[in-house]
Length: 298
Image (tube, rainbow, N blue to C red; front, side, top):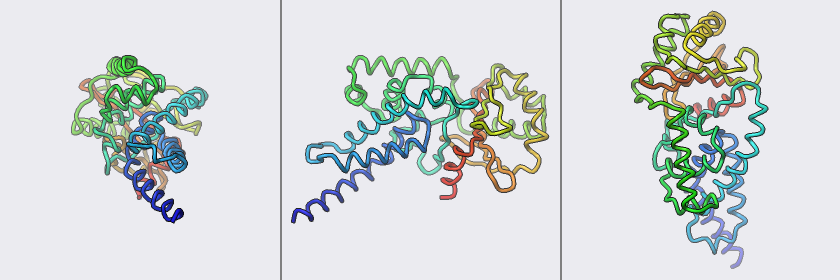
């Protein structure tokens, strides 16, 4: 009878975990900016859930979210040192949001590549508080409990994060305009059309190429309309001939997957405002491209 009770308890625990899993991944991914690390966190949360005395847990989803958020904060604190030693610009790992744009959240907030890039500049606790509030609509008392602080401080954490995002990022355009600008940019980049490039780029545009040390990726961000235009014009003859283009979705925005000989070489994402393209993000690191491409085929 005891063994039967244990089996039923584990089955119930498994069902509760599966129900919470999309939210757990959504929290971990937004805090870490890495789908691989988020999966590791979710797996660790599952192991802890198995080994917890679940009779004492009134709200499994709340318990699991707390565990996941704290694990993600701890990992983010150590990841910061690793990213300081990263070769070239660091960009978040892209995720395919075509099936679940909210990724387990109340709304699709804090999932765009540009937002995750800006959030990376915050400390992990600020990041987690902002994510829990903006994407998952958690009340401040619960956020305070999860990140182990006072309610007043939880409000301050979210407020600081909002101000930082407002200072770092202009109001984005809607999805249709985003795609239009990306199409114009793509055509101009492929042909090295300097005049169109300068027209579609904002004055202080930044181009990031995350290659993780692979050849061909710029190891520093390229800043400013003229510098970015000439940079794109210069590498167009080497990069685009023979390239295969596939329109995809990444992080709730249209994006372009570039392949050569059937092998993915870059995911092109942009951040667009009414001024034009503010950020151009080239994810070229094979370790980041592979999970994303695999998710497209799933």
